[in-house]
Length: 170
Image 1 (cartoon, rainbow, N blue to C red):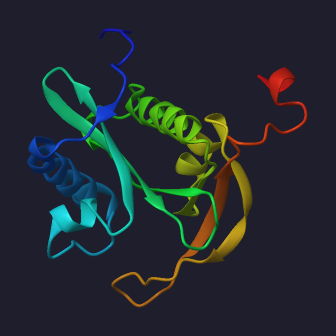
Image 2: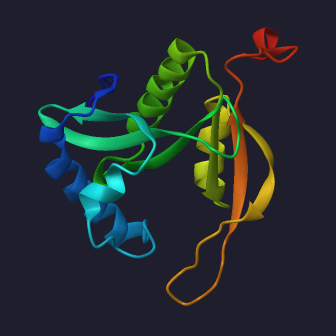
């Protein structure tokens, strides 16, 4: 097994969409994300307000995806969404590479990031180690197929304003 660092993410192109849908299907089968398979997966990956989408390759193959949307609910911030990595290739640094690429995109735009994620120890740990700060919880605003509404953990990546002590904490 190689300990090589995965390549950095790059902007998603239209040619990447079939591969992104295939990875999303594998994620859905493994993790039930999204909880209900979208009727139009390409539209799901390109929702209204899309600012940019990144993919992370492994060789010639796309293995991960993340997108930033304009966020109507938080002026100035961009919303991180549609984050997923091929389940067969997890724990190899691809998700962290995506989050690092998102941080670069946010910094280039001079915008903070926000996200919400169904409370999950593994996902929350990943976001926290990448510098995202948990700011609270809220109802997710959607329902699982069985009718339950999950609780979402809310996070912010403060790009525009460094928090006191950030430089010494790393």
